[in-house]
Amino acid sequence: MEMAGRPMAFCRAAVRVLVQVGRDGGWTKMSIPEHQGITPAHGGFPDGAYPAFPGNELEEVLGASIGVAGAGARIVETLARSHVWIPLPNGGGPDSRSLDLPTVEIEGQAYVPVFSSEQQFLQIVGGHMSFTVAPAVEFARGLPPQLGIVVNPDGPVGVPLPPSAVEELCKAGRSALDGPARGGRVRLFEPDWQEEPVDFLASAGIEFAREPGVRTARRALASVEGDQPALFVGVQLDAPGPEGQALAVEALGRALGA
Image (cartoon, rainbow, N blue to C red; front, side):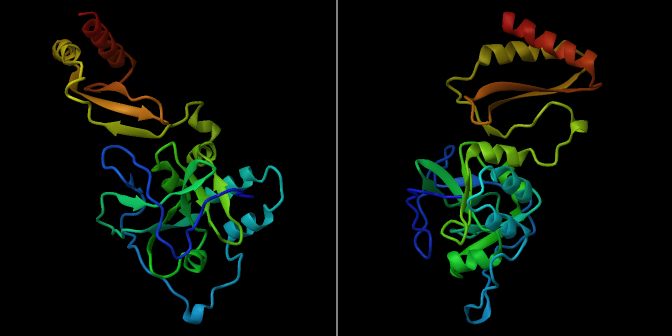
């Protein structure tokens, strides 16, 4: 897998500025579902005696993919059952609500670098930077949709996964029994008070209050797979089911027509 024209200077250098996501600015913020309880660490091997590449199944697949057209599907499949080592330039811990992630740019696309083993992390990045370990699938599901993942940048075999491949990785574990629906990565926003549809929300509150089966309701501004944010209304029902859902939808319809 070739990464021609990639402006990377990752090894033992200052990590690139992170892409801006949301209102925090400057860094990519994410929460890794599996990072709770995993303490970021500095690893090491005596006298720099790094184990030979490949050292695990993922690295074997990466090595076998060199020059093989259509190897991407197998790489994604193997990643789905693998862990990755994630650099943390600003550190972090099990109690951190979010982690700051670096990005590198490949042909204009932002990628988050990860590594296939501790050996690769230390050999490429060095022992000066903290890292954490997470299942690749859970890590991918926590990323904003516009980001790709690059495995082992500047390593023996560096493989970039564009956002479309990361989306496929997020679907890992689904089967025909799960039905045709597929999940999407969702980012939530707090609506701007100057743009919030207060009249509609007030009408919706009145309509819901008339329905004895509606327990609570809430609104959120959400973006699904990078689409434009849209207003979502969530309703908690005493008796969830088709009938209760229909009553809630009818109440919203009346509020929209008010």
